[in-house]
Length: 283
Ligand code: G4P
Image 1 (cartoon, protein in one colour):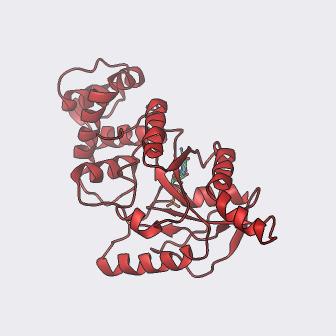
Image 2 (cartoon, protein in one colour; image 1 turned 90 degrees about the vertical axis):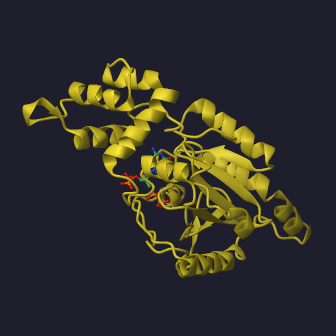
């Protein structure tokens, strides 16, 4: 469930402090980002919050993202010295890799405990990420339960229970909810396309037009295949062609722009348009 949080400087400071407090209790950070928008969905100051704590980047919703882009992003993070894994938190695809990566990232800690005679100590981890990247979904999947229970408040709530998962991994029951980037227009658009921010940063029709503009450039064949249209002319003409195909028509035969805009964005978000990545590394 995405939510709208108004982030003020005071909020960010409090969030940061409560996350830093929780960080002192864990061996490992699981940083969730959206595989379709790894740059836009990464908190701007994550490095300064996590510092040298072992960390794994989780490219979640990788089932919705372009497979080639997924590989490019993994290579990109590797070049920055960061381990990343591809995950679909809904189906659990990638959980095994996540558990392996957790073992890898905390190997030094394990060894130093073993030297002192402590064996089979759990790996304690916390999840960090901006709203809507799938934090609750991942907690539920790892915990093997169905319904979510995450606080809709910024930061981390106080309960601090450890959730046992498969293997040695134990999770702090409440994830750290970080603020998104909000300086760049492109980032705002990407967050809005994916539904991460539901505040209308733009009206839905302008948003859909911007989305079509991107699709014409990067994935025209997916629009053609899904809507059985020929992609030519302006984004508006493409939108109108889709509207006619899908019967988004109001009285007098005019296009229902709101309806067709919602339809297109909805189909993108659900993945029925195909696997689409909105960002590539170093763009
Ligand atoms: P959060 O705690 O980080 O805020 O995110 P949450 O788990 O609530 O997930 C947000 C939405 O993303 C949910 O959709 C969830 O089902 C979906 N989701 C999470 N992980 C994955 C994944 O790996 N793949 C896919 N395809 N979807 C994923 P929702 O319940 O429909 O919420 P909403 O879209 O109405 O906000």
